[in-house]
Image (cartoon, rainbow, N blue to C red):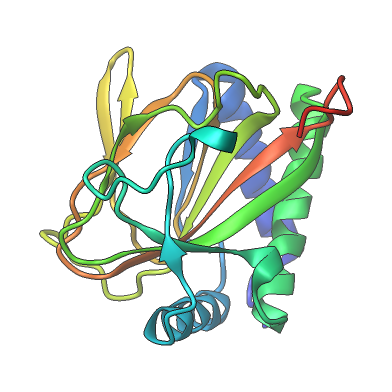
Length: 212
């Protein structure tokens, strides 16, 4: 399914590692092949049309709550989805990124969790950090966008709140955003049309086996 050579993807991931080391975030365009993005987008929207995506919650553990005014996306974890070749390929590509980050930055990333996310028109996600206060396992956040016909004015930008100011990233198909989960405040601006992505986190192995 992939149309991009391994060498090109590897070079892109080396740049991601360099960016994380210097500034804590990275944006890379056209990382994934159009055919892979099309297949993943089709899978996401098929689940949306069949009510297989559920309202996302905020908080952690017993504090989980659905608050659409703060977070308006609908999600489904990849592990809970029906098997698809496109999903397997995506995970394999992200495994190569995990290996690159461990080799270059010694982060000790042990696993990867990811879910489809779809924002209906009018929804967004207020400013937040991805690492939970009582659970330090999430190390690196990863977002891959699946929107093949996104245009200026469609909204839904990922806004990164940085020391030097804000950076807005359009959710265009094939774009990969990677950032440190504990230090980069971010939000999703209101989308004016359906906005699809895969959102995930590289995690380190817990020192305490009771911590998950």
